Image (tube, rainbow, N blue to C red):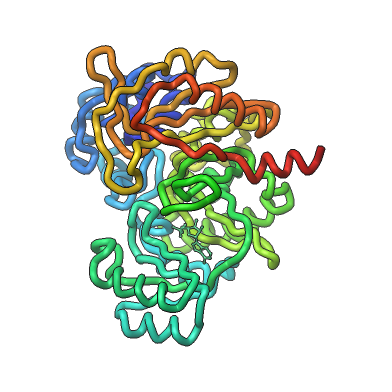
Length: 427
Ligand code: AMP
Ligand code: GLY
């Protein structure tokens, strides 16, 4: 079959790498893609926000299946438009995708279905929001309601910080996303990412991962899209995974089905493991980036039938096989990220680095220019490795990074620290 993948990040490179290994594939296209994806797929310079252009491309090239990587096209209704044109797609409709694109939608759904999450208030004006903060006290969490590239959240240690965050959001600090805010109780615990495939009725648990959201070592510095990840997340025991399926994923699927907007695609639950059990931090309507990179490295089964089963409502009785090895990925970003950064710097040594045992390098913001790979974004490379232990995967990833020559880039040196500390404690 002919498949079109939408997106251009490390998540999409990992998906392209996995889809390209499927015996079901005739040809893989990717729009717009990046220099790494170009090794797996034919990249096309389509504007994926132009749904008519995407549909026309699918018709011209007899695309059988479209796989949507990022959140923005989901929120823009690409799956609805492809459906209407009779083109099968992996991903939720715009209405079901509100689980990610509207925090207030998800908070109301949790409340109505007894899904464990932080207590909250939803406000359209700064004055009401501030009154709530003064009544609750700190620590407290202030969130822009809409999509803000994972950066619309302020975890405020003091009341003054929370009040300032409200002013910043209503002053347009996150654009349209901040026109409404959600204010939440601060939850204390260890965070993990949980992924499940969904076909509207049934859910199939995939695997867990842990992300590192802060820019610098020791979980310091500003929040980013994610600086590294590993899978599985040791904090998520089998019992906790079963609890997340039963108390979060399944009730959410039932609720959306009953609303007439069944959820198909991958559902990503950000979970806080608190002293009172797992609580939902947020839902995302897509794979995590960089979590997807470690999931793809660990998945043994062909991914294409699983993605098709989501679109076709055939997940019941479906199962996937996984490698026993753990996987870890380190994000290399351009210096300055998540703030302003330069584009167009040269990266060397990738071929040598990729030869290290167990290592796969997924590209995020890269572009090819002649024989050179140039940095073309904030998050640029995902140096991913498998191993028998997190410690081994971590050693391999950093060994590969040592062979990459890119003076304008940086990475965290401590990806996996929580899991490595657990492994040490066990020995
Ligand atoms: P979100 O975009 O909702 O995932 O929030 C980004 C990050 O902020 C999360 O990954 C958490 O680390 C943190 N966070 C969000 N909500 C809360 C909360 N209610 N309590 C504690 N930390 C939170
Ligand atoms: N790594 C976090 C996210 O994809 O939202």
